[in-house]
Length: 224
Image 1: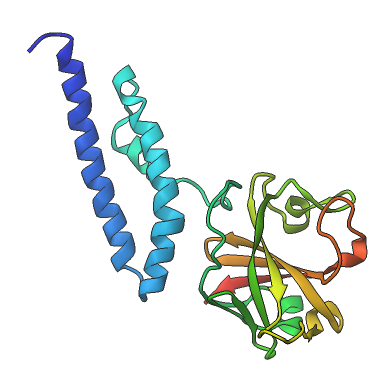
Image 2: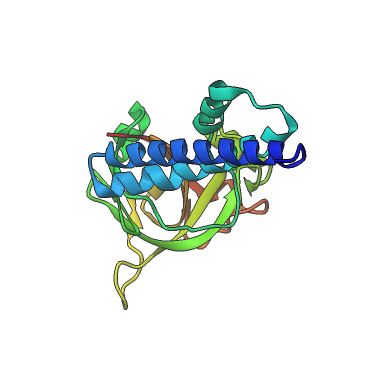
């Protein structure tokens, strides 16, 4: 073995050991969930960022900056920030969420996400379809950003979904959450065990030129 190849082989051994450990961590994340859907959410929203952080950490190993098990734990753990905005799937999550504050409890009650539907404890249902992804720093009205309104980072991923009619040939029904007017756009911010929801009235734009009256309200939910 030459002196030049020794560090390379050492780095490969470290990488193999790290990847084996991560596979075990991801497996435990999956089987720990109560339902298959919850397991998928854990892999999709926890494992992928952890793998990216791990890759960044491993990439520093050959330079001699390896920090052992503590570095690996930090790389996998990450933080509890909302997802960063980037192109990707806009498939709505599934799950049951209870109201996180009194205002949400009074207006909407609990929220259940089923396929592309938002189902509220009050009996109201909103059928949606993907619209686009925006960052928290973008404005939904003049001088008002999603990040400021939701107390989120500027790079948080906000999922915009268009509210559509419940069936072909029907119109969008009026929404009690929008003061009796039809809802047009739902903005969702997923934060692991929380979901923040903003609703906008139909026929109103969502952007820096939108009138302040376009926003119906903001409600916060926590996973059950």
